[in-house]
Length: 234
Ligand SMILES: [Zn+2]
Ligand SMILES: [Zn+2]
Image (cartoon, rainbow, N blue to C red; front, side):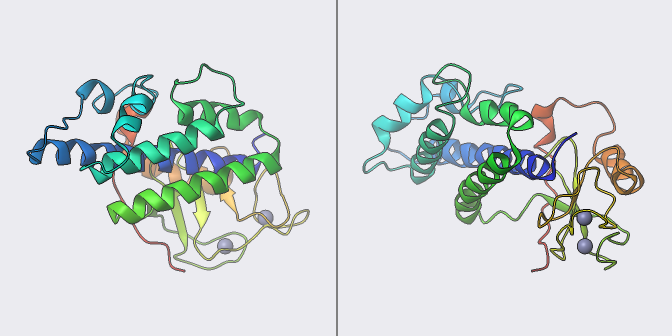
């Protein structure tokens, strides 16, 4: 059974995947509109595969070559992010140079909860840096209904770039552990509530959102194109 720390970490990984995809587009657009002789090889930034376009084995080398004094700040930031992800994924299965974010994401379901929690925070840190640059809000969309834990209304949001579309409580309520009325299959004290498929809340609220956003069975690579950023109330 998926631990809530793992659900949060997966959502963070998909969020970062989307943010990096947009950053990649910015970097490519910058390259297209400047007259410098630094062009962005499309084989580095232009790839779109199910694993995302960030893991081309040549990308790190190419980005590294541009890093100091590069005229393309978005490519430089993307390079920084890839180096940080490479470091995070260094001990994970998979060859160095393979998409580090995809390797991290694939590993999350097997992580111990406290490792998943640390991974989530590391990914969110990178996600925040990229979204600051892009002025991009969180990948969340409001869903109607009442939080089964804190009973606030109008505070539920579904992650739009995580294919599982987990729901979170924007009021920031945390699980009380055993006896908590949240209905999460794994009640973990202190964790922000998150509900995935198979929970009554998700099946009742997120399924219609998924059906609306995803009329056909889209591959994960297509899902991050759905942009429904909405700010969560602090
Ligand atoms: Zn709540
Ligand atoms: Zn709870």
